[in-house]
Each structure stands twice: as C-alpha cells, then as structure tokens.
Length: 111
Length: 111
Image (cartoon, rainbow over all chains, first blue to last red; front, side, top):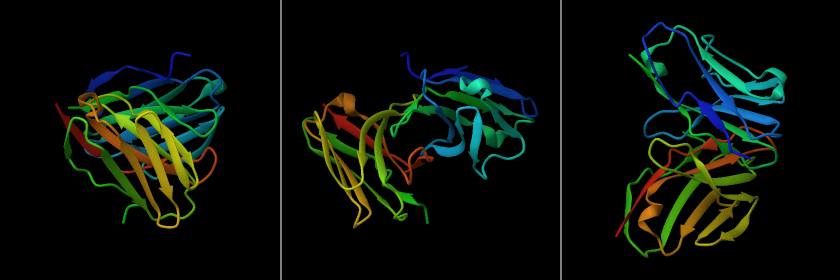
C-alpha cells in the first residue's frame, strides 16, 4: 500500500490549453474523489466515483471539466480551455470504508 | 452561510500547550467527522475519524463530537513545533458520501 499517487505534482499551462491529471488510488479502494483547493480555503468537492461509475458531480464542475475512471482503477481529470480561475491544487482521495485518504495533489498554474 | 464554519486563525501557542480547534456545522444529517492535518503545499493527512457523538483519543490527539450542538473539537496535548500546520475539519452525511470541509485553522507552535 503506497498511498494515493497523483501526477504530475505541478503543472504550468497557458490559458486556453487543455490539461490532464492522473490519480492512482490505494489498491482495492472502490471510491475515488476529486477536490479542488484554493489558497486559504478547504478542499471543495468536484466529483466522485464508485468503481467505474461517476455517481456525483458538483456544480463547480463546468462542462470544461471531465473525469473518468476506466475499469474502476486510476482516474483522470481533464480541464479543457483552461482559464486563470482554474489555478488551484487539485486533490484526489480514495476510500474503502469511512475514512478518505488524500494524495499530495497537483498544483495547476494557468498563466 | 457555509455548511461548515471554522476559524481560520492563525492560532499561535507555545510548545507544550494544549491546543483546542473547533468547527460548527449546520447540516444535522452529518454523521461522520474527520480531522485532517495539512502542511504547506502538501495533501491533507487524516488524523482522526469519529462516527456520531462522543470522544476518541489517539496519542496526543482527542476528537470530540457534540451532535446536539453541531460542534466538533480536536484537542492536541503537549503541542510540538512539528504540529504547526493547517487543521481541516471534514464531515459527511452518509457512507461513501462526499466530504464537506471547513476552511482550515492555521496553527503555529513556537519553540
């Protein structure tokens, strides 16, 4: 058990470009969550998978955002046509029971 | 009004002090309560998990939940400089549901 792994750790992109982040959950964890955190705030829920099914999406998740979890293992979060307001830490968490364990996050900077 | 309120601090204490961190919430459906510690530019690390009301102790940490008052606390005994971090409370209504976070309290323990 190596914990939740997120890649890349840092991403700098130009406004209008597309970016994709990857999350590898703790093995056998069937639930996977994506959160976004901006400076001075707690993480905000974006979306949630149980196995490969995307069960809930936040209103924060505009149509420029898409998430997948093929085969119920790793997950990807894609942001299309990035905007400066997308600059944030994107966190992934996985869970088997009640506790949720987070990865180190991907810090996105849109310039 | 946010579902979970948490004083952002910063809270500054001398080494060895007892620290009290608190959150209030408005959603009476919340049943699962967690405390996370987050160091700068890192992902949140799960410290304590509590179900429903009551106390839970783990080493220097004690978590308390008072559902009648919609109030949760984390106590840290014999605080150390290494405890300096942001402490996030989080809670969920049901099994597997999304976590709702407070904004986090910045703690500084001075040696």
